[in-house]
Image 1 (cartoon, rainbow, N blue to C red):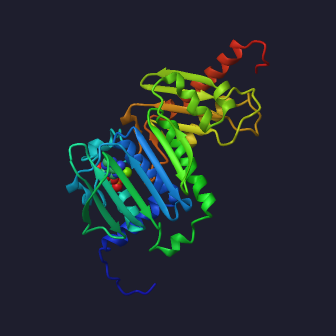
Image 2: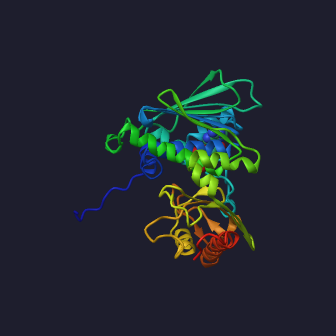
Image 3: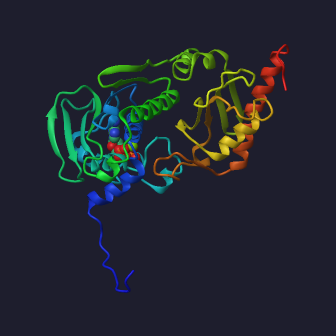
Length: 347
Ligand code: ADP
Ligand code: MG
């Protein structure tokens, strides 16, 4: 480093967005996650996803949600533009999946993005194109039903360093498939479909009856899990833990049936993992992994979701209490299972 003073300058908007994109847009699956979350936040009941060539070539997400008004389209594509929060106080009570106002700006800085939308109140649908830039968005009238469609073409076309990290089409598609599984398990009331290279691979119809949830569970996890799962529904103070765990004495535990949601958001969290492991300790083989699909609901101001740009992590204000509640709810479910089935060898 030389001792001369360096010139400080404000980065151009596109470069700033590309840097931010590094945190939010890791691969095609992260684009899919952000866009599907936007569709859910818009109140959509149907979300159709089309992928070409593992998402390298094209990602298209269409929803029937509330839409974006014509004069808001350009704004939706700019950085730090969001309709979901407006004050620090709102940040304490986040009910939406998004709130950072970064996804569309980030994605459009590293791909060719087309945003088409028609709110119910508008006669005409409008389309905005953004290609690696932040401003001067051009609007054109188009034909489109109520809702929004976001198309992302040639991901990382202008950032060769990132493009190099894209894996084979199949690998990238598998990541997308997994994201759709996770999200589909978080909203049984929404219908999802997923096409790859023109072929319909997944179709999860909306299920309004809770008794039907096992159908989607069977389609996404596996039939054995859905047929044998122990249902949980525990409450303590303002917390609820519901969902399913695989009985500890069945042999078909799969390493990938591990889904945990906090207020509807899929999480991978050390504290949660620890509580689950501890509850299964001594009842499953130490080398096998517990299988679960669990939903923790907790008062919104008891958790901070603004820890990581991709929102994989949360922070609980009362971590110990949450940990012990999860542990107890699962341990009780396991205990109940063994006492309901006295013929089975219990711990
Ligand atoms: P965030 O989701 O954090 O608000 P985004 O960049 O993902 O930020 O989206 C910016 C804004 O664009 C959102 O706040 C929302 O108002 C609007 N928007 C994005 N996608 C959709 C959609 N599918 N339907 C309706 N509005 C949308
Ligand atoms: Mg968003």
